[in-house]
Amino acid sequence: MAPSVPAALAEAVEGYDWSRDRVGMSGAAVYRLRGRRGAPDLYLKLGCGGVADDVAEEAEKLRWLQSRLPVPRLRAFVAETARTWLLTEALPGRTAWQVMTGNVVAREAVIRALAGFLCQLHAIPAGGCPFDASARVRLAEAKWRLDAGLVDEADFDDARQGWSAHRVWDAMMALDRSDSDFVVTHGDFSLDNVLFDGGEVTGCIDLDRLGVADRYQDIAVMWNNLSEFGPELQRSFLTAYGIDQPDEGKLAFYLMLDEMF
Image 1 (cartoon, rainbow, N blue to C red):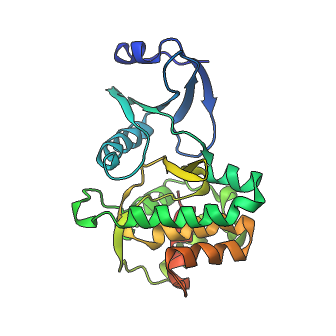
Image 2: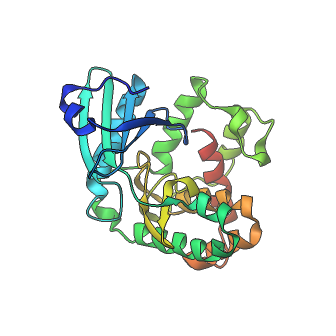
């Protein structure tokens, strides 16, 4: 069922068929809009309460990245009291995860394309990025989530199934937490957040965690995603990105940090 929308969005969404998209864990309500003759498919993201700020931040980051990398075109953003609305055009294609699960032969090519796209993102001059996503910033947010009881322990990776959130925190704190290689990062560079069409990357989505951070923030998330497809493809991704010997400590740290969100 389509939610009521602000008057400023009514004309833009008129004539579309709505469906709820439940992929992802952003906390926002996401809808796909299809079927308006002569018009592109759209996505509408609605944030309420505390999530409203996250959607507003994503709109700001999307504006900044638009001219620098393929991302969804921003159609409109509306902020109301305790609610925000982000309307974007849908990127063509399917997610990297859908391509890899549907075509075994294409997996190596997808891996190379993912690594190449990540290199493009990380090549954007970090000095011009106004968003700070460093370990210091994310650890502060993670600690707040831990203290508030918001960490979903049931969603931990297999390596930490059965752990408490406090055990993950303590193990993470025992690791080296120093950022040393700052780049512009996606923040959640996963197989569900990169789109493919015709064998090419058409762009990335879900940019609310975008910001300057250690490059292993992105490397660790994708490396972990690829564990579903086996260690050979994990190694292929690292090699295609340009890493011969991964920093195991950084991988462990950023995977534990990701558990907190």
